[in-house]
Length: 209
Length: 209
DNA sequence: TTGTAAAAAGACACCAGTGTCGTTATAATG
DNA sequence: CATTATAACGACACTGGTGTCTTTTTACAA
Image (cartoon, rainbow over all chains, first blue to last red; front, side, top):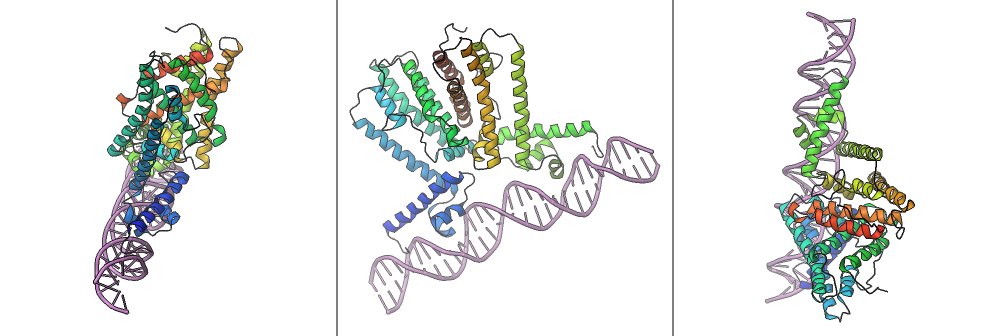
């Protein structure tokens, strides 16, 4: 279907593989998917697959990167809006456009946890994981710092610690999402409650509707 | 060293294996340890190992069970003491005897996460994981309910939701512990802050020293 | 139309890990 | 001491997955 070359066809094929891989990873988890699964899902031969990706790890990291990029982009877009308050911005960063906790969660989240947990003894992966953690942390730290600087948030707690507790909260939910059946996870209720907590920690006055 | 039989020697040998396995699992994680690792650590032959455990999963579940048993026992001991308050009891359950958040964490915690996350598509393991989750939840729910019933805790929030947020908090920390290098995890600070939150949610008046 | 460079295919060799099974060694028993 | 049941051993066959390499196919250029 595409032999000598043609940027578009290559791009297309690559996307087809990445796409298939996303589905397979989401469905089977990282450890349990094999290159064969991906081959089949993408209707591509062994050789075809290895033409584009050196191994499963390479493939997964590609997906991680793409995901991260789109999050960063989304985040940059947030800055272009006019923001009522840093509290609003915080909600926006935590829950996206709706500013509301929802029952939804990234299908790939469990596999991502898997990837970093099982890889915790591998230097490369661990460092990569740490970097992602720090980046995630910064997103929140920045907002909180700014909010504290302008007096909207209390300085009772160090911004980084508050940010950490946000990340830990999200991590905890992701973990439960990964392990428990959907109906057992009360994402919304727990997040609502967590927000109460944040309001307390930051001494937010006005109530959100 | 032990041929025809003798309850004690069998018990001893079995323990030797379990012990070795604990170390290996803690060090290598669940997915990455092989039966060979365990054999070597325990100085036991292949056949010797399979005499006692059918496979890696069997071995790990044995450890899980033992751990759980000792936790349950510990917990029952707590009930025998005289308790000043349900708040105290809650702290006791969360942090053990010291009633204080500490920087320590179970060495096997990461492997346990691994076990349940990678096994989330396996019916047996998932059900087992759910049961453990529910049991863990109940430990907290019970205390909170009792505290609410006697008026020590506010009924502002449903006991189960508060319990869930405790479990999620602990899960989140375990996850960070599993992924991040020790110095990056601020177990104590985060737990301290979480306690503030609990005090708020339960409307605890008196301050702990 | 033909030549060709490179992509796609899939057979293959290889490896690590598993669980089994026949053999060996030995603690208990009489 | 001899017998025996069985725990412990370790070689082995098997499996599932990997990454490579040769062959085939085909888009493009001349």
